[in-house]
Image (cartoon, rainbow, N blue to C red; front, side):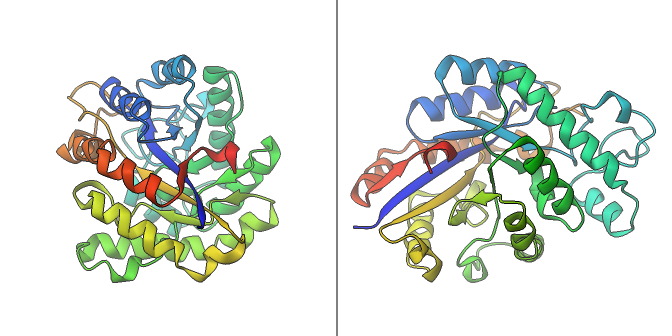
Length: 300
């Protein structure tokens, strides 16, 4: 039977105490195996302590789109900020980039500052580093991101190309448009990351199973169809998958966020829905029946 190494990554660790607690509860239940830390999150220091206490594998969720920068020199008068003094936002960042308004040397400065702060908080460099709201695969950003990873010797990242995404007719058209944009950016990023010696899991899942769309059956069918993909045969007898998840207890304003307070995504009932789905015994049984071993990037 094909051996599947499954990295279940809880994103947005450090966002708020309630998200932190939910992610830790998931880890202790054996439902996630890895976390991605927002170093500009309001509860980042607490998250780093929790990861140390419970020996949770932790990487960096680089953030250029939500809240405030961590680099002191960029907190005022920077191309990365909007008129309110915060990052441009998920779509605003993409608009600013497409208009040529972002200074790539400032992008690099901020990414390096986030790696340094991660090191300060955790005592080690991140074994993996990805991008909040998938900013790391955007044009221009991908080159700077790859340079920073190579510079620090960070070996692993995420490339969000999800098998079967086009067949997911339950995803609303506006969201699907965004996902297809992420997919296209990811295809265009593969050569850049490869050139810099950066690796990622063989298969990525997480767009089709997010929030309300997560169920035991949706996770099962996403994994089952993914391992049948031709690319899964690259390493005979074994395949690695990263499942991106966003579990937690919903944020309660004004606590949380990355400088601007918690957003709708973090306050949504969908965060708790993901937590409750991931810890279901049926999902754990499925992993056992399919020879799926939960692990982190260092186990690849």
